[in-house]
Image (cartoon, rainbow, N blue to C red; front, top):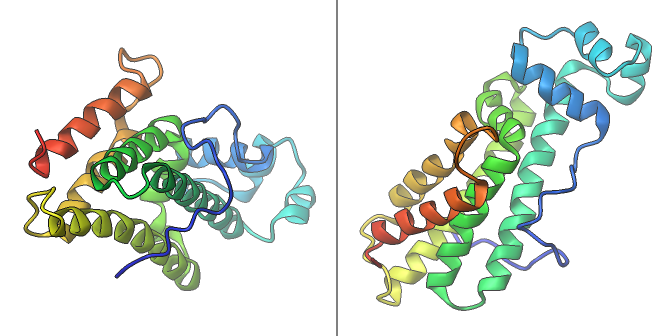
Amino acid sequence: MEVDTEPMGEMDWRNFEQDSLPPLLRCAVKTFVAHGYHGTSTRTLARAAGLSLPGLYYHFASKHAIIVAIMDLAMDDLWRRSLAAHAEAGDDVVLQLGLHIQCLALFHAHRRELAFLASTELRSLEPEAQARSIAARDRQEYLLIDILRLGATRGAFDVADASQLARALITMCTGISQWFSTAGPLSPGSIANDYVRYAQRLVGLV
């Protein structure tokens, strides 16, 4: 399945200085990460955000609406960054792979809490929202599959099963959100560079 890789406006996909989440959702992310979706009450969310329950309901109709908004924003942010990285690489499939993996690794380090929730709380979504989230994940996966298939077609990559390799590479990158710490010895940039080399080895480049 080929996906539309037309970038949606210019974006500095390596820049994570600006938090894209509004304050209420940022508080919700931290609360959900600390207690889990099911372990967090609406009252707890309101208190964390410094709001009354009516104040919270003014912005969101339910706790489920809050987690849906968080996951939609997470997948949209990653998608826009991925398209910008793809556009930067142009027609160079080797560069496409490198920048795509760099983008995934940077996102899951810099946005680790957001990415962690998007990964672990898919099960908490109601059917319609869950289906939309799965479709967004599939679209993200297909982008990498297309890169791997193109590289194999051009003889640049040694890839027998692009779908399986894409899942392995994505799992490798999404796992960063589970262990990365800003207090640790590794920076997001150094991790991303290492992961690019791992990906290159897996397709037979080095």
